[in-house]
Image 1 (spheres, rainbow over the protein chains, first blue to last red):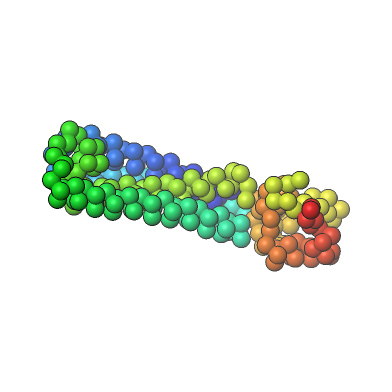
Image 2: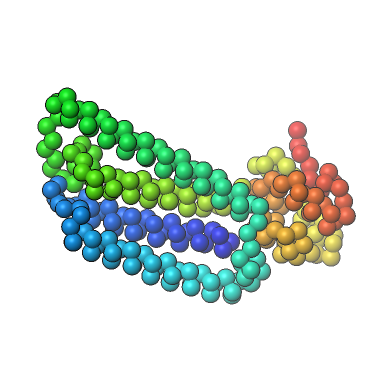
Length: 168
Length: 70
């Protein structure tokens, strides 16, 4: 396994775990929860600090592995195949991110349109209901965009691993 | 037929060139060992530039190292 592939695995696992933890917490909040309140701000800060610590610890561990393995890994060399894989993976991630943003923007537009028609009585039972059916406040939209960014990042790392494993 | 449709004689040529290792070939052509492994297994079609560099190491033409099966 190359250094690039190892880095992709670590990044994928960190993104999936942190993303899952964050959105699991957000979705389990009651529908009227204050997403801009001190409790959520504290949680977000805790999450950012933890992800930095995990990333640094993984980076140190990978560097140690790199030095032990020698060869290309010791030099951290990147060649045309790595660049091509990065390019293809970024393209996939960009595709997912664009699609997710289009869905969020359409959702905002449709919900606003339905609200103006007066045909939608917003009665959300959970935070998931709020994020899907509204009414959307700016902090709800921030959550949806964060989800889009997370999905985009996960797609980039998963694509890289796929291309390295399958061979490209 | 390999997935890329391009077969090659790199493994055999390395052997004939004093059992050159994949790492030595990778260093000589400025690529990674993983890329040499992928090329030998037919899982990666190298760029024209890399193909020329590999062929030059064995003092052969690109056609003598790589073969595009119809």
